Length: 294
Image 1: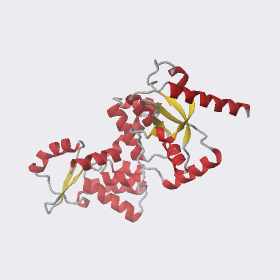
Image 2 (image 1 turned 180 degrees about the horizontal axis):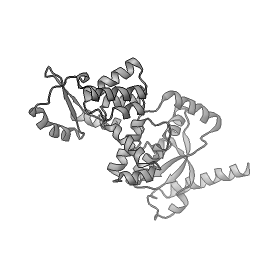
Image 3 (image 1 turned 90 degrees about the vertical axis):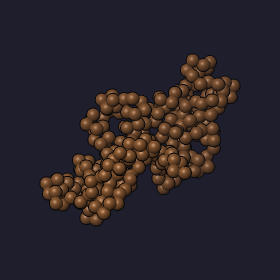
Image 4 (image 1 turned 135 degrees about the horizontal axis):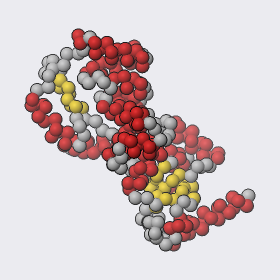
């Protein structure tokens, strides 16, 4: 009981420190050493969600279950936040605990305090989320790609940072070459990463989609999918007939890709009709593309 009282008193003292020193924004600021790494009970309305969060979907049922657990036991593992201007904070990790606490009507949550710049924030959020087991393969692949693009890591450096073999990192990244429809199928659990890997070397998008439809229709295993891909390569007559993309399309793929800020893909059928696919990597990216079309 004495230990619990001491911790509560410590929390009150640090909360007072925050009120008295709202401009602690770097490790060199006065009293920063007393704040960094401490656990403080913070008001939920002072915390902004992490804009670098790679997870885009939070299952409502699991949030309700977590909320019920928090009602009974409290937040066992504090969330991690970084100090912003004034007395505002930004989530580094623990968004499920944050959302579940709001869901059950809590007004405060225990949190570790950190001070980090945007690049450190992005890296912490991505690496922390990658370590979780319930990310789907595409979420992992997108997180890897963001670390490469935005933190400027090589695949070798990335494999060391996330504690995975380089071949594992490469296998995830290759999934992003698949048609967006297949990527969505993996995210929704209709096909596994094994199915996706089996189709990576199928270059034609129409072939990929045809195989995907057969997997769903016939409930094909990964091994059966691998055999189907082998047969497709050995028997050219089984490939869907696709019209050669004309020059007027080829010459405009690059400017259209630059407009959307994403590499687009174009497919055409024998009747001259075509399809443009524009991939997006997050809700924020989708909204950015949507605004371009206004």
